[in-house]
Length: 302
Image (cartoon, rainbow, N blue to C red; front, top):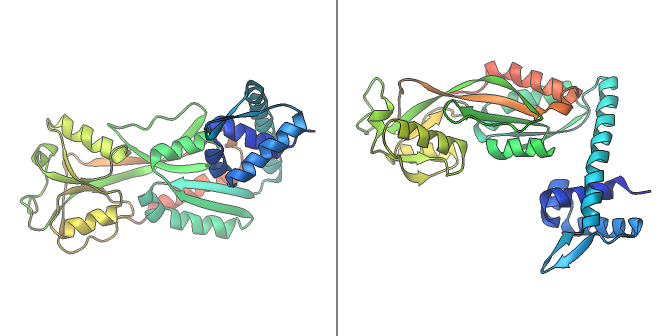
């Protein structure tokens, strides 16, 4: 009989393209994955991997077996979900991903309740950018992801994923106290042309959103400082460096020397929870979504 764990290892290598990446996703060492493949070869009396340079490639037989493994693993997952649904209890492992400010401003409240109310649930959290979080949910590595997008930068979901909106998170223009805009009641995007921006790195959804916002105002933004962490952006602003556009969720108090200038019209990002459709009936998913929605009104904001 073919071992299910070895099929899982083979499928992961086929899906992610390398032993190292498969090991990372499965939580194994690369040598452990290689051992699983070697045992599977002996079990099936079939050559599954071939050496090519410093790496390996899967044979045609291995790819056919991996396709069968995908169907088997889906059936196993469905059986596990059915049993869990019948028990009606939130149990097992639950992997949650969230973008940094949601991890700071929203998750602590939801997590504390999740852990207290469902002690049989093994909750794991990773801080992940929305694009990668959605991909991880789609691959089945993450069960629930808290993500965000903007009206002019919508976040597309692959087929088979669902989402529920948790709320909207306004963003403010932040400038040093000595800045020319510091005393204004409000500004428009056109007033920010020519400024040196502190912004998230290229490839992030916030970076793309600011590019589109400023281009709509008729200018290419000058990204002088590429900084992923908002608290670092605030520290730079406090020293009179650049300007920023920072959402309120998880922002905390502003340091001395940093001033809010309201942006008109107000810009907000939309915050969602995302999960796979096939897991919708899993009790752990149901209670997690419920607690995230309950925690939203109590979130930590500016």
